[in-house]
Length: 393
Image 1 (cartoon, one colour):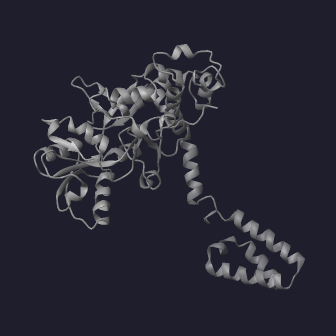
Image 2: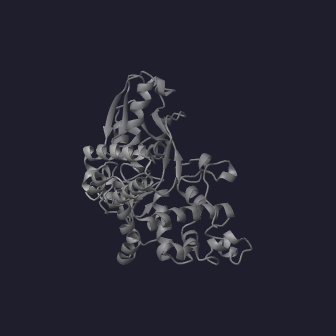
Image 3: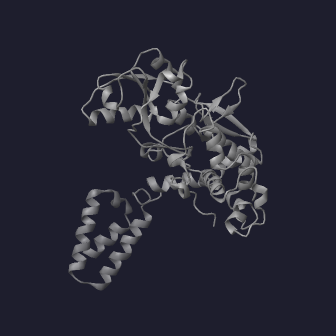
């Protein structure tokens, strides 16, 4: 009778979704095992495999979260590159205006570290660094624009965090700039450390990690402050300059850039203290593995180029190198570009037409630029920094 009831339940697979059915199955299984009947135990094992395989609505079946996410990834693979090629340009989301990272001049020509990364991608895909449409976005709208497919990549001084990476289903390409949050204060104010800001008004841009970091920093120290929140960097800087707050808080690189836009840049100083880790980098939508690999390995290529000493000016002198990794970067060995869906000269064009990472950093943020930020932790690992490109092998 037990075996008959068990077999009847096996072919009524809907019982697996019924808690009572699961309990009955467990009890029947124990009864069979206790009788030590070899045939029954064999049937039990086979039936359990049958149930798991047939039930498409369980957490292991075809309608599970993991399964549906995988289908989305496969269906989306390669679509971004195909769309870019069809329209003839990359749609690059950038900041509304942050000199050194992304900002237009009076003629509408964009420049900056984030801008140049999009140019690197354009060079890798089209052998032309100008096939881009730059779309300025504020902090509030940037992720919505990316998720909606209005842009192909967000290259806009964006911090890589768990919340953005996992729940929002985004993929960060890499860390193009290691940063940390700080404070800009008036030179004539008696403010030397963040602790001196207890009870003060602080200007900050909304919908950013900077806003979140302030809350955490002050709460951990049992301090209070009055947030004065703005939508854009320009608005927050204007608020600071107008005296609406005692300090302006943002990533230190952003503060160094924003200070240049003050009527009197020398009237403000950047406190040396850092209150957070801010790994900044480009972001793409989750689901297109090919586009993720193209963007990531193009970044790694310009890092490796700097490590090899290859620049936009001397790159042709590295043709026919005895170093196999240089030969791969030059497109002369192993067809790395074809594996990405690109021409084998993808990395060569990226470096030749835009530059290696060091060149891009120095002209936009380095000591010879208006921003004057030292490489520091953004140096190559061979020079004591954190920048590191996986090997081209």
